[in-house]
Length: 503
Image 1: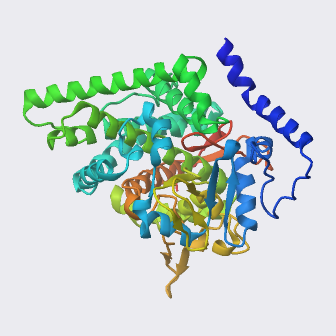
Image 2 (image 1 turned 120 degrees about the vertical axis):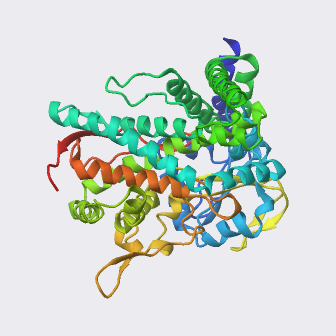
């Protein structure tokens, strides 16, 4: 009880100390630099940061938009600071040109270790290189692509479509974000583990593994929002509050995952070769049998695939509901591809691909990504970086930079990704990954990028071919983006489903 009280009043205590410091000072504080958050001794920009806690992305974006270099330094409490940038040249420097110098770092690794362990998204150096090499080999196989196609199509035809048909018939309002998360969780568990949690069922069950995984992800993300890392570290040491719940959740997740690993290993031992082509079976069959290694890497892929596609699709369906002409263009494309095999169908859905890219420009699944400088450096825009400095690039802000996207950056405009040829046919015009780092860039660029687009376009085609997704909210309602390990729509997306009839 004492320690809980101590932790809860720590920010207030430091605020009081700051006020006393200012009151006794004989010299007035200098005025804050223009276009920067107000900063004070001891507290840094904590007061302004806390005042904007419910709109931190927008708050930081405002400073990046007004900065001549699209970069600024945020002063944190107790002398800590973080460099934030939305400058493509800086992003390329961090993620490619001087890649070895910008790593996850010990603080990020310690924060996420209880959940991700030594998985690919939580390590640097040789450990990362080895896991990247192993995973890259598997992701580039045609057999995995075919397996993903089968899993997605089965989940779509056997679960998602019947659920939407029932909702249309009964007039039920669904939280479409929840439905898409369940869909994605079933998919990624089958792809990663060969395990079906059956999370997308008519009764919308609270599947134990899914619920525990969600709790663990939300609780671990709370560590990034604390006043100072010492806060959650004290809680963890004494096993109290959210850290107590996190310990239980992560223990249950890892126990569950390790049991599946052991079952797969036994199956491999009994059969000499595994018939399943999920990622875990592939890793084990290729000789990577260390239990902790395969558990960590598979949990990492679940966290990567669990919310990213569902978050993008949630915003996609909301955005196209506000632009009927965009939905009609997507439907036209779906009609043209209706007789094509699954992969060929979605591969050539150029307009839909542009809509998804435009969605993630405005609402990236991972809106900010932080690194730590291993040595002193100077960014291309002249920003000096000290050894050990925290440096973050900001995809959310980058999608809102007039210098990159023009004065109409606030518009949902798929055509900015397209051009028509002489015959009037659309062709896709991509952006380099440093201007649009939604899937990371450089050596760490997302291995599952093509898999993600395959899944998303298959869902779009499968849903819109049969149904209209109509938001059940006021016309002028503006959803709020909130961030855990990935971004979500705050409060979900309530929708009504309507049968479209023959196309």
